[in-house]
Image 1: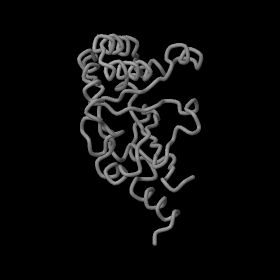
Image 2: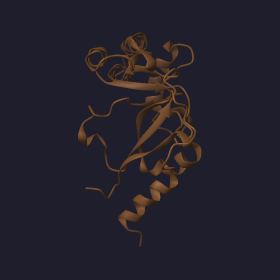
Image 3: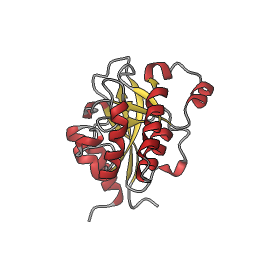
Length: 193
């Protein structure tokens, strides 16, 4: 019988403990994923939503359809369906936001390659889409991309400026994250209570 500690240790063995060959300009962002994704993360890395296996979160047809509205308005090189999402600062997330079976991944990315947008705008747009208001979803998508700024610029803002600019800032990374650019920061297994 596998013990709780052995199960956690096994998770950490499937993902490298140390970063390898990370350029100095890379910065840390965080991503929540599910315990079930660890095997694919260790082999394939963190994949965008549309790529499924190893994706940063489970996708539904409804969610993808809503995100496609955002994709039509996205700046060149960006897409909601073909991106990985992260958070630059997790100190403001609620303590209980890490649900059972969750893993907090620390990932390293080039700040020149990512944008910061307001996850609240995308959430409102997806709610509008789900409620049948494509026009409203389109307006939220427009606002989401219009307000987005490069991560490199966001990192230069003071905490007060960051707070005033976005309600819930999310980092939009328009590519996969290779396994060597991520490690487990925290784990809350299904048995943790």
